[in-house]
Length: 116
Length: 109
Image (cartoon, rainbow over all chains, first blue to last red; front, side, top):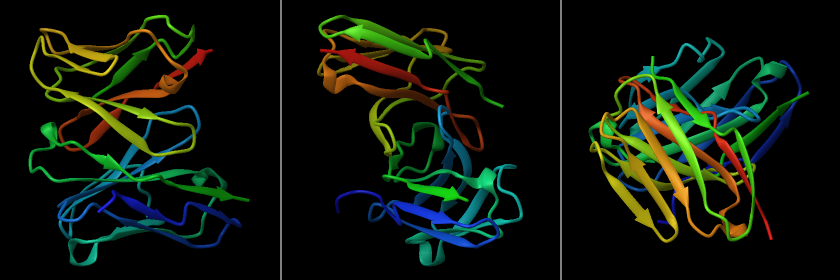
């Protein structure tokens, strides 16, 4: 296994369209995280999964955003009715440990979304 | 909520020079992570510090966590162009993970 992978790497869409991103974590990593990063800022936490359970959601995750992790393996992040403000890099990370404070996350290359 | 402040925001150094990046937390840190990010790419894990006074090194990069566990520093010795990128500190905020705003490092050959 070579690491966390994300697909697509780039997505350009028109405002109002729906988009879906996929993240494949490192095998056997039980935690999976989604972040959003805009230019010049650090990543902002969106949500995370422990296996298939979504344990935490940031207030940044509006009703237009939904994330799933069926069977506790890959995850998808869907954005409905995209807005220009959704333009950002969406990063996925996975980790193995149970305790978040000592939990090293390994990141994928990100999906860059541009909403026109 | 956890807040992480990094300084400086950006740094331009001549190749071969030493440099230090700081990360200050609004709360006691129970796990402080340093990552490096190339522009437009994902984050690469560098080091994790957990104990007060802890210091770790990897190649020419050394990270320290102060005794009070509220401040960390990342020191690069004899910088090289390959060190260029954005350095981010991150920490557990209880129910989510927080990152600092990053420090952009440029190394001039």
